[in-house]
Length: 57
Image (tube, helix red, strand yellow):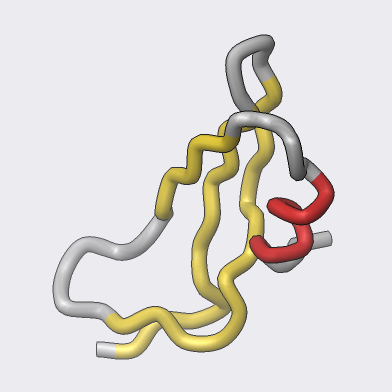
């Protein structure tokens, strides 16, 4: 299940968070909701890879 990014940040409140944007190369515009694609938790921070539901040129 792809959780919306805002909900993930709310759940991880109080923790240090690093966000990595996953997007196609080129002049694309993200459309729809920004969603969590992957979450990796370390001692230092929670690393969240996010991407939009769709992309348009």
